[in-house]
Image (tube, rainbow over all chains, first blue to last red; front, top):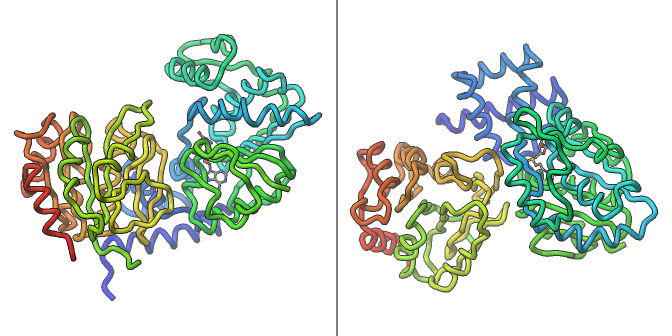
Length: 276
Length: 190
Ligand SMILES: C[S@@+](CC[C@H](N)C(=O)[O-])C[C@H]1O[C@@H](n2cnc3c(N)ncnc32)[C@H](O)[C@@H]1O
């Protein structure tokens, strides 16, 4: 069989994925391919590399270069109060129920640079729950986690985040949560005093605790069905009965094997609750 | 249902909703080729595009869900704030990465992805719009020997997008909406 360029590229990417797994332990075999191909092509052109072979050489001789690559293949785009109605729904439908627990544990899986984490913390604070909540914020990517810890976001985004905050039912002056400084906004670190941030790979790592609420938004879209199923099982194992699961706007539990044990709390905001 | 052998991808921006309604309104409910529609919209509007199209077309209009399979008889609408990609098994993937040409969804992203999977069986149509998005994707379709159609700039509400495409793809077909409509009907496999 004669392989055209596309088929060759795809074949080489498969080989690269296997090598990365062997060498660095990151398993991308369950990632949706269309996006992986696109990210790799984009990385090649950004780095002015001509071939996958040049990429290979770079990846396996230079771990900084690999970190760079990891950043690029895993999409880290995020914002505060993304889909404000989701946060509004958490505030009105979920937090009142969680407030009946003496102690609340939340997992923010795939938290990226922390915008989602700080949004959540602000909500908890305003609902009077922050002091008895522990949030575990995880991501595959160590570099974004370092940023998440700092809570420093670009000041140019504050107008958009401010309207997101109010649309999510914000009760204070949004600007009371941060200090502006040279084009950036540093968020109040007391918001995250009960937060643990650490690396966790949804593709390979196991359950590490039990939670009342798990958020995993805009991460599953990058996975194939099989890997999605693994992650759903992981969440199910990590969920107390009657716990809540919040997904991204275009993600669904419907096709999953665990779906029969979950009820939709808010269809348009993709919030589910475990039955028992 | 058998997997589709080809695909129609349509991109538009300003003026694109009206133009795409015009070319799609006469297609029968059992139209044999799946249609993907990428329209720019205001970042903040949720939009009831699905309703707008659903009311006016015989085809079923649905907002794309990730992992959904492409089927004939449907117009698939790109959701706001996500890029739309197509997998080799003819299912959709969504991607919330950086804007392309200041847009998400970006027409270039979907056109390119469609051509990667459907190759010369890709039919790309670029309509009215005040953007440069779509040209390089349509060019990619053309290079894969697919069909590259651009709305006649004379007729387009805003001609920036058609003109940019004609400029970068001298071999593309420039057609008015009526001609595009007739062409699409001629592709229908009874
Ligand atoms: C598009 S961001 C979403 C951020 C945030 N949840 C939101 O919705 O705005 C996706 C995040 O998932 C992370 N990610 C990708 N693969 C992962 C994996 N296997 N395990 C954990 N996190 C992963 C990426 O590093 C990235 O930070």
